[in-house]
Length: 468
Image 1: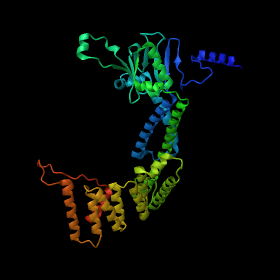
Image 2: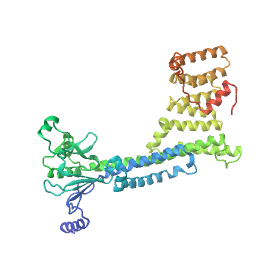
Image 3: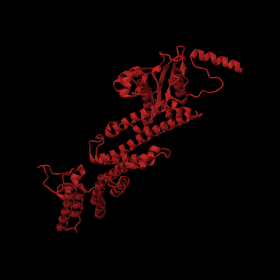
Image 4: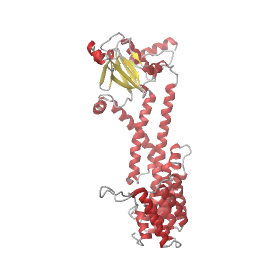
């Protein structure tokens, strides 16, 4: 087929589908501007903007699921590590329909008390321009959501620092009298419409400005917007933005895989210690021997998941190697080992957790308690000394230090009493102050957080009472 025949075929297709024809070169915009015979120009958002919106909503949906799974164990019967990826794909579909609803007339009406008729999101549609090519056309308007703005009233365009395009008007105020102008001066222009400029391609941004300049040749464009419009349209710029969105999509997939594996691994560590501590967890497993065997199996599964990580997973590296999430992994591993009877290995695991989160008082106290129970009094005191320094307004490290002194046969009652007096003096300086306080009953107090293990241990060591 020759060039003439090809152009004839393009003309037929474009006339049937109502699409402007582009012959000889590829258009600059990601989506063609749809203009019908009545002069309606539909400006759509770019592909990259749609992808970013889709991924952001999917992140929010997955965050809700993660918080639910982390706070409630009702999902334990599900192999969540297997269904993590399908869940992400499902969330992408849900996010698409959520965004479609939010920019639909029903969605806009639902949220109109908050957004005053503007769409909550600009997903596929940016705006529709109703205009002919005549100057001073009073029927020309721009429509978005449930709003319609006459373009002949727009006197200036302004691009804000946050990337919003403002359509502003002075004409809408009407003509003021000379006396009013002398008394008040120039009134501030009013904002008629607000759009996210980055949602559309640069070519569509120019289209909007060109239409407005045809209607209002004296249209004022602020310097920031003019500089953006004058910048050269780089071929492939939209592709680069889309690749950025594709990378976020990859991170979302990685997040679904990594966090589902993280939750599954934490579940196995939790079941490993729970099987040895209470019969309420997996009551169908009967007998101490069977429950211990199942606990060892659960721990082995968790260890297999911890060691079998994907090298290309960025999220797994963040979850398992850094910050509070990695600290939680090593703490759960240590607690499972402790109740399995491997206490020295459990202490090493908890020390690793303490290295990742060194200021956690709970980790310090738990580590000191384990060291004290295994007879490592010096190691216990070393941890508690750091706790007393970092948390000088907390009583719990002092009580554990007294427990360590009491365990130490070389410490006399007078020495323990002297230490208690030092602790009280420190609290008088840092917490209580000089009493009594005005008004009567306004004494300062100490807020403490005690876990059940703390109460059981301190009752046994300090009060010689076994409450468990």
